[in-house]
Image (cartoon, rainbow, N blue to C red):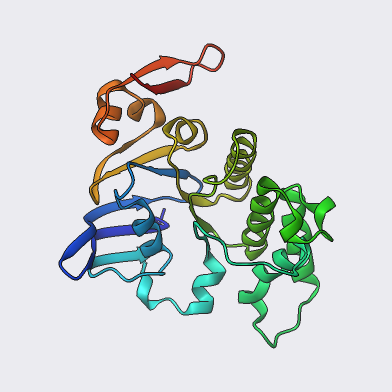
Length: 258
């Protein structure tokens, strides 16, 4: 099976300062990947390279077997959905109108918004549990509801890959669980490759199939939650002494700072 992404020796530098790399790794379809590591480890930079928001200064990135740079803008937008850490303003837009923007790569500015587009928007609102908010203004929603509205736009885009940069950074615990549970469910239902940046390793371990740990711009380690959520591994990732215990109900490993 062709990887969604193949990163081969990619590096990103600003002047003489290397922010990421060289780094090599692959991301497969139908899996949720959590990028973890301390601030400045290169997580957001990697996501921006994958989203083609920035261009690698060395190495290469392939998307479904083709160089990422060779994809046309609309063609790429039909296959890859990206949600930055800070979402743009949605002033005056209803939830349904925001979700409909996800169909732009399929019909363009002058194209006709047809029945298929309408179906994708309705399905996206249903999948994100936002149908009841369709006529609400995005600016009037709570943080969790607003994040689900943006996810509805990405779902309507009907891309095979989602890149999410800190999608839970401004949310309370209940909304974090809500949004990450939704992301995992979408990956399962649509065979999506999802790559998301998370600060909390426990949340990453709970909702991701694989964790990818970066440190000082390099790939430190990657593996299943059980492989990463170990005392020595967490210490190497975050640079502090940590302990691990098993959740009394689920058995999931939980990390804590000692």
